[in-house]
Amino acid sequence: ANLLKKVEGLCSRGLDEIQQRESDALRAWLLHGGTHASLDTERAKLSEVRASKMSEAIFQHAATLAKSDHCPVLQTASVGSNGEEMKILVWNVMEFPQAGSQMLDGITPYCDFLLRSLQRKDPAEKRLLLEAMSSATVIAEHARHVGNVISDAFASGADAVLLQELSSDVVAKVAADCKQLGLSSSFSNGSPGSGKCEAITAVISKSPLEEEVQVEIAENKKVRQFAAARRGQLWLVSCHVPLPSGKKGPNNEDTATRVLEQLCEQFLAAGHPGNVILAGGDFNASVHAVAENAKEHKPKGCRQVCLSAPLGQTCFGCDHTID
Image (cartoon, helix red, strand yellow):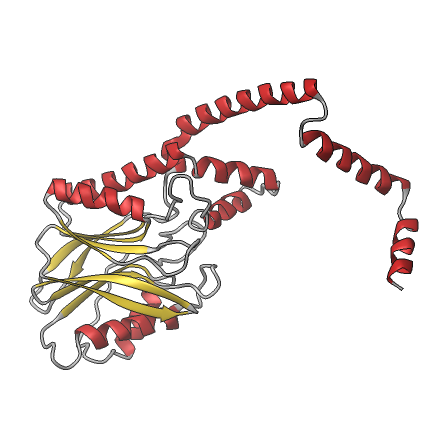
């Protein structure tokens, strides 16, 4: 029966299909190399030219290619009943691969959004963009860019910076920069599992940090570690709420609300009178809707909920405020 189906399949092919299959097979055979010396020589020359042109293009556009899909968000937040305010920068830096790594999960969704927005459907264009964004030049530029955003934030009067989606390479650079600038820093562990984004979170403070912990968040079949650090009675928490399917949408508010409830349970419930939480970062949900949920149904130990966030888009491809 199987042989009969194969014969029927072969006999049903038209001339165009047979010619296309033979042409593809011949092309693959020639491109494998070692069968046509002059062709191999010419392809080697073209490969060198392509590598040179690609390197020039990457160098020219490195600053643009190294950007995150999230905007750095600088806000002044109320941190207590006495009217005290703090200037905070929150930013999902977007995790670029480490040099030589094939782990492209951090940049692939952004590439997909870009190409879809440009109505570019050729898979070769996606491969080209990923090649550029995972190059050593762009990775190094990304690390420099992150450092510049942090230093600029503190130069403009920020009291703290909360970061998400750091790789260990960028953590090493940021930690060294913080030491040089006299800033306190605390970093979470990366997410478990090889071949995946590390998704490290960070708290960076102008004032000394008195206590550092990590909050484990298990939502949407993912586990994330939130860096949390205390200054007096204020807990600074860097949040990166997991998405259910890798797509940013308006349906993750319940998850983000549960995350706030967990934070309040840990830092505000019985035994912690007077504590204040400043939770900032990428909530992967409308932060305005999440705040309304928390105001209407205050989490355990929470007396007051205040939101400091812009209106509108903070992440490419998402039409509501998620940072």
